[in-house]
Amino acid sequence: MKKIISLLVIFAVLLIGVNTTFAQTPPDSTDIKTDSVAVDENKEVTTENDTETTAEAKEIGMHEQIKTKFIEGGAGFMGIVLIILILGLAMCLERIIYLTLASTNTNKLLKKVENALDTGGVEEAKEICRSTRGPIASIFYQGLDRADHGVEVVEKAVISYGSVQMGLLEKGLTWISLFISIAPMFGFMGTVIGMIGAFDSIQAAGEISAGLVAGGIKVALITTVSGLIVAIILQIFYNLIVSIIDGLVNKMEDSSISLIDLLIKHNLKNK
Image (cartoon, rainbow, N blue to C red):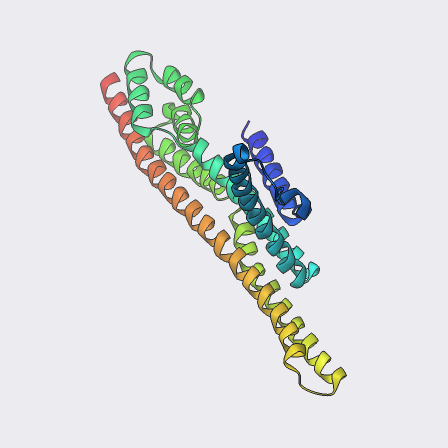
């Protein structure tokens, strides 16, 4: 189920990215113009239509500006930066959804396990953990499954399986970190190439002209800004994901200690 949700999120982000890249062209000016001669009774309706049309034209104009800057920055490097943004956001959203589904009410789970140990024993507690989602319930199950072998074995099993669950929580973070690093690099590479193009234009013209230099510098700045914006966006999501993982790991450690205490208490009662 989690894999299906993650694939749907990635598909949605890719679809949004493609729609943003290939923005719609503005409509004909004839659609925006209104009839100069209007009847007195329809003046209010015409004014409302003009307001809506103006807002629509501004929105389309913003899309057109983004599209124009994208083309001016160079389809090659700007396209790579856009792909990095789309893939990075898709992986960030997949991690956030996975971590959200992995969160568990540890206090409630511990209470259920404690009641199950008192009434039905270890098997009933294992059944509760089996029916509960999240890494904490999985760690509890591994510990309870080895409850007959002693507390030390349970503690080792909890620590080992906790490391496995931590690896699952951190899955994909290396790729997000890679995207954060290479996005500015491609932007700076576009900057260098843009400056080289500016100097080539000056050399071909045989003189220094503000227009020749400005074109290359403009391309250079667009690619640099785009790479930095992508890195900043992904860095924010990366830090958010890391903070969520840290919270889950702390809950895993605290709940594991509480589980061992419950098993010790349960064994003492049976004795």
